[in-house]
Image (tube, rainbow, N blue to C red):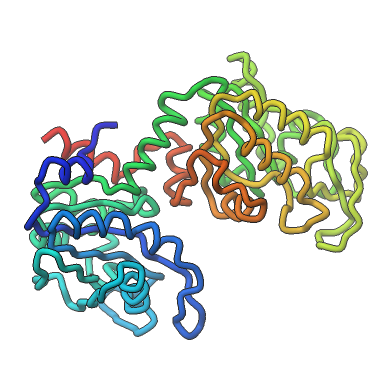
Length: 397
């Protein structure tokens, strides 16, 4: 994917003295009193800001936070706590600027934070007059928010259309490289793990991957629907019987290419969905009418682990069981540790996947952890993200 990279502009000496507008993803969780409870996204944005400052740019940073109503400021929508935390991480004050669309006073070597961009009327609908105003604030627009790359908004897409220069920041560039490595030019075999409660929410992803991957591991409620499609009993497990034809089509599409969707040979069942429910391992063809499948069984987990260990590239989205309950976490832990131990290049994304990675402490063994939930899913669906499209177009001049 050919885009202009901010790091290259710096290397070419094109940033000193320039006004640089960075669209970051600083949408962090806060408690009821407004205190930030988890600051990963802020810490992840620091390298781009530091790069710009060290290159002698006049730096403006903005992000959305929460779901504010455009044009209606409320204290809980303010980026003030984020500006304070960014200042702590940078070791300098980061002033917060409100009502900024008509002009920003910032000198080379300085950084300011521009108040929640979703407060600007026209942001969500990417209104051209707002996009042109934002573009007029800067000499260089830096998109460094992969979590918003699937949205065409004024601060993510419109500004990139009209800014003198539009480029990818280090976070976005890393996502582009990881996605290209995993999906555009993968080392084979390419194995994808797609899990979740419903086939319907990930049907387009499954269909898209079925055309490209060598192995498609399904888990959670999705696996139950595939088991049903394979003629296996699933008791009272979560599934979507109305999508059996779709599941069968994915299995057949894979089979036609000499690829496979491994169907569980054993499962872990319970009589109720609860952390303290007694867990029983059963063969996949022995699930009783009152059983609820909450995890893959140890034989299935071992089979999947073997496939992951032999993979060249692994794409992972979703835990394969109810890993929040320890009695039903073995399958997800086995898969996670196989991903970590495999010599394959691995890319993982999605909130539950990241939670599993954190639970088993394998952050440093996964090749790349994607920062964007919705954006990551749309990439797996085979969609071209708006941010990628406009940055590629601008790179062509």
